[in-house]
Amino acid sequence: MESSQTRSAEIHVGTSGFSYKDWVGPVYPVQLPAENHLSYYFQLFQSIEINASFYTFPAQSVFEGFLRKSPDKASFILKAHQDITHTRRDPESLIEKTMLCAGPLLDSPKFAGILLQFPYSFHNETSSRHYLVRLSKSALNQYPLFLELRHAGWNREMVYDFIGGLGFHYVNVDQPPLKGLLPPQALVFGDKAYIRFHGRNSAQWWVGRNEQRYDYEYSNEELRGWLTAINQILNRTYKLYIFFNNHPNGQAVRNAQAMLHILEKEFPQANLF
Image (cartoon, rainbow, N blue to C red):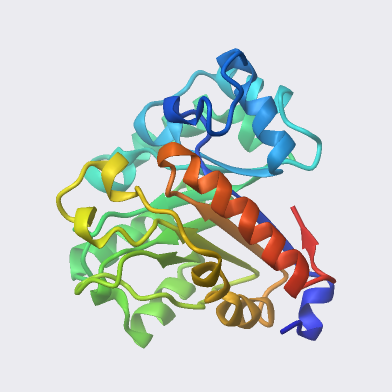
């Protein structure tokens, strides 16, 4: 399975968020104070998606705390606020606010990029493409931008040429095999690649809240099913980020740990973080 490119490849594995009440017990020791959860997380992984920024604009002191509690080799991906990707009104003012609040992180060598996760309702149509152009020309363009799409209408060769031309990196997704959703892919735009695992809970995907939609634990066989795609990705880039968003009850942690063990065996020359 190993290719010549994996000898110098970096593979960063972690979870989408770290602060979940139902991780107390399955992940964090019950007696561990909440303010120590992030430090504990970094005993397990060196890479993380910060998703609190999707729901609010944390104060600069919060990001300073993230940096203080993380090791030197830590990698942070910042998830863009939902009003930038979902509401999509006046993104420039929201981007300015994001950059002000997250300034300590954005200026840190631990910062790895910004995740732009668009919803299923963001279809491949003229207004959507114009919005992506607008973001690509915004103040965000000074940072690595990882674009996540979910609707199958984006699965077009000409669309990928368009997205790559805007300078976005691409987020490959693992989600339920339902009509209208993007299938698993191995696309790489630029010098970085990304995979997000959302679970395959088909029964709850359309009707459940986030806690229900992402309530799924992958088997090792399902994780290993991605090895061919990962090998293809590593033949085209030197850096790959893999994050698990199936967070209920700590399932993301268990699956991320399992993936690290699989990758360590299958790509022994890669640098795992």
